[in-house]
Length: 219
Figure 1 (tube, rainbow, N blue to C red):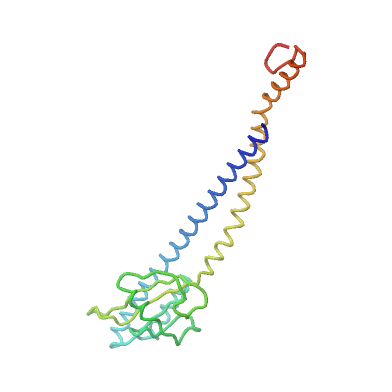
Figure 2: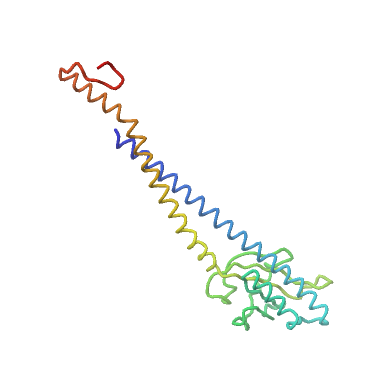
C-alpha cells in the first residue's frame, strides 16, 4: 500500500514537472522571438526612413556613404545585419561586409509591402543557416517603391539562449524533484503507517492475541 501511494504521488509530480517544462520552454521561446522581431521591426523602420531621406537628398539615388554609419549603428544595437535593396532585389548595401553580390528573390520582395514582413529563412542562400527576417518597402514622396530595407538575425542566438536556459531549468527541476521525493516519502509514510499498525494488530488478534495495542486504543 505504501509503495502504491508513493509511486502514484511520484508519477503525478513528474507529470507536473513535464507540463511545467513544456510551458516554461514554450513561453521562453515565444518571448525571445517576440523580443527579436520587435527589435528588428524597429530597425527596418528606421532604416527605411533613413533610406528614403537619403534618396530625396541625393537626387534620386541612395547615398551609401551617408547611410552606412547609421545602418552600422542600428546593426550594432540590434545585433542584426541590415540590408538596403533596390527594386530589382539587388543588394545596394549591407552592414555585413561578407554579403555583397546577392539578389533577393521577387517572391520575397512581393511579400514585403507597406506593412512589416517577418519570417524565417536564409534569404535564398544569402545565409547558410536559418535566420529571423524582417523587412519593409522603401517609398519616395509619390509612394513609388524605390527599394527595400531588411534585417536578418541568425537563429544561432536563439540556440545559445536555449542552451543557457536548459541547464538552469534542469538544475531547478532536480532540486525540486529531490525535495518533493523527501516530502512525498515522509507524507505517505505517515499516512500509511497507522494502517500497517492496524493490520498487524488485526493479525495478532486473529492469532489469539487480545492485547494488540493499536494506536490510540486501550493497552
